[in-house]
Length: 284
Image 1 (cartoon, rainbow, N blue to C red):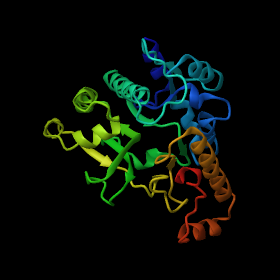
Image 2 (image 1 turned 120 degrees about the horizontal axis):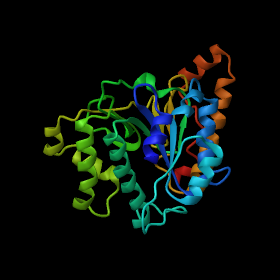
Image 3 (image 1 turned 90 degrees about the vertical axis):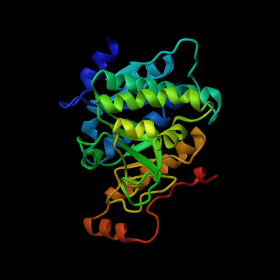
Image 4 (image 1 turned 180 degrees about the vertical axis):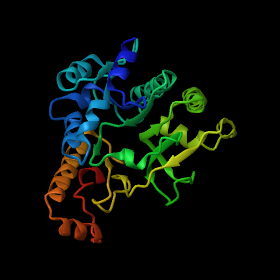
């Protein structure tokens, strides 16, 4: 009932919510969550979207911090599991919250809510909904984009996706969560890359579209034109300190860009050099 209440309060008129997850390691003052929320406040037409953002706290400390800085918080408790503190990439303690997240997102679909899921290490600079079609079933960001939104050779990144609540997407999320048993010790994103080719998924009738990194970029494949970019993800980067330093560079780059004249913004977009100072620490 608490989840229903939080989703209802944050929902857009079409029953769409924005979701992110948070644990204590990213919840400290001056940490990732502050940069994340700050990007909404300085982005173009993004501040209003904070009204529809639900922060899903994975531990009590993260939940306490959330309720002190944001109106829509939900505590996703898990018996016998401690999600506090940074988890080393691909360790069992790292994988558990990843799969708990997939299970939770399936529950959101079951309750009839569409969602945009976003990792908290993604900076929001423009309203991404202008690139999302309500008729689409599942739209997902990429670590590498081939140039074709329908090409399954795109390397998906589950850190940003839009999912329409219907019987097909709910079935897929249940199948995805079940597949963790078939591929033990695997990241949810790795399993997604496997099962998207599965005949069982094709039989569901699921349509998957991939987002162009020109608009939804990251450190794996940065957006090249700030006149286009909607989001920037600190993917291909391990370690909270590395992410913090490079995300701050990204925010500084954006602030400098928005201060330019319209003419200089156009010139910036046609430049052959990268508009970003990052990845820097994340290169290693």
